[in-house]
Length: 189
Image 1 (cartoon, rainbow, N blue to C red):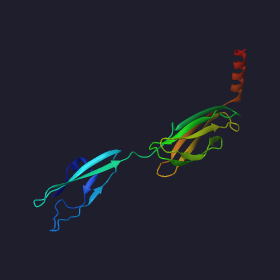
Image 2 (image 1 turned 30 degrees about the vertical axis):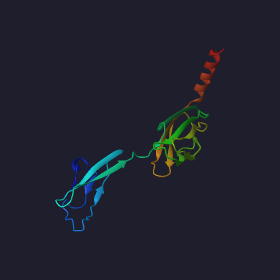
Image 3 (image 1 turned 60 degrees about the vertical axis):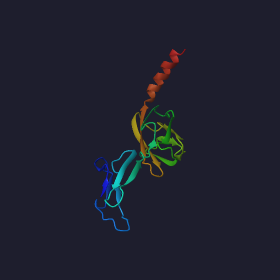
Image 4 (image 1 turned 180 degrees about the horizontal axis):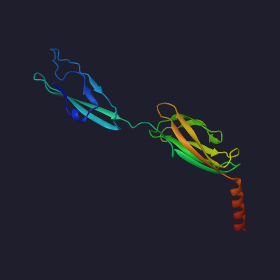
């Protein structure tokens, strides 16, 4: 007989052959094992195939399956907020992009709105835990006061999934800035 030692708790492995095989006089038999890793999380999985016969010694075959966690692009935040006064450019923010598996990958970044600035727009995340620094700013020179939204699409090469960074840009009226400047200049004298 051929059985899986712990089949009830290991649905990822199954035998495609009958549990009862006739072993020919040559002593050779083919056995098909089906591995289905669907719904398994990262980790090591083991099972033992036990082949026993009245005519031959029992044989145990250890089967191991190692599942790696999915490879991901890592960004410090998927939401970045800026504030600027109308007709000005926001302060720059720098984000570092890396991978969770420490492999290198090329990235291309796309912006959804012309008032959003990124530099560089492409580059390489180096291997061994390195990161690619991206400078982001928002230009309010053509915008009225209000809240504006945009996205930066991070498109990696290879087997990584795309990442979307949401941008929220608040443009303040110039008048508030003038009042702030007056208050600041009178309190600093």
